[in-house]
Length: 567
Image 1 (tube, rainbow, N blue to C red):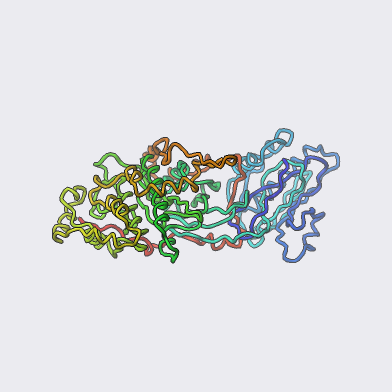
Image 2: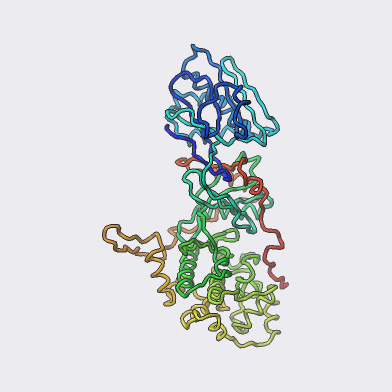
């Protein structure tokens, strides 16, 4: 297989593993060297004469008898490289388990990806990183390598262009953007990094401390399965998942998604002007994504501007499914009220509803619509009770029918406040973009009774969104295409596609303990590895590694207030 190591950015939080083994000739040494000096080192003494500052980390020196069969030489060399790989990675493996499968007479055509997966299955436990030297000997070979926490592997030059490959740690230099954190949420941390396989910038989401409780571990598992399930232009999905360590050391999850340059919150609070066209195309994409989620019977439960990612072309994607769940049709089953950031929380949840529907998402979209129009949070309160009062100040006191999902204590509170008339006219003062059509749609979204609140399909059919739909499908979507020959735009038959199946959460029912969730989640991630792509791992030699490793989720003080406990 003719493959050279891929050069990575020095600041990268990811690395690839690769090694090349020559097929021809008697190979008497194997080395790791910096990419600026691809020629193999000739002997161990050259380690000490290497240019100052070189990121040299180890050498495998092989002594082989002249009469040794060529396949045996290659087999021994492969085993030595495996020893070097796993030692410098700080992992111990069972060398004996690999010997038969390293025979190049049977494995000469094996894909590098398949070989790496095979190797990963044999990695069993961590090796003490304080060990800085190790010597392996056999009747035909000896290996010396040097490693320490401050000299972790970062380079591997190609030993031959005519070779079949297993993976090794690879690293290079180049003109790349530095890795940096771009978001901290309640359940994860997101960094902007470069994918070494194609040089594209991607988002790396770190989910730490996954198995602290049964609730949190199931929540992470659910989010991961959803992100692998989603296939929609306006819904963020998971492009790749980093291979997990042995289950005994499995505590964090790393997933890769498309990188979006900003989010709607940053755009709203920025001095950048927002025209009516911007608002329409943003709202159209939000509803387009919500329609897809609801068609899969998923309630997002945390739609807010910060969870609506936007790129430089104004394409929008819904993200963060940490609170999402499948809609519960059984009204007798209670659902948690600790959902939705307070400013976007529907009145039925604020009033203690034990059961609610996907109408809570439509309320959140209405709040965002009002925020786009006015460039400020529509209902910005300090507490859930005050939040409810701000809502009734604008929309008026809810009727008894409007409060059928509310708890008795909330109903008594609303009656005690006295009757208030709605002041819908205030919506027209949000901005010049608050036209009659805009306010009409907004009022249908901000309906107190969830059963009367507009459904996503009806909202998409509202005439206010006609221009947004046209603009999106004229130049922004991937479902329509313009012919390179005729220049004619070919439009899709379905502008707002739905999911072709309902998201199934039946797998959750027998997850009754953290250990069971951990085992199932580990197996699920292992099954998701794409055998057609080179796997990625976290690079501990990255300049950003220390900062990345210490980055954590939002502190409790940064999270929205909990719901008011009425009873």
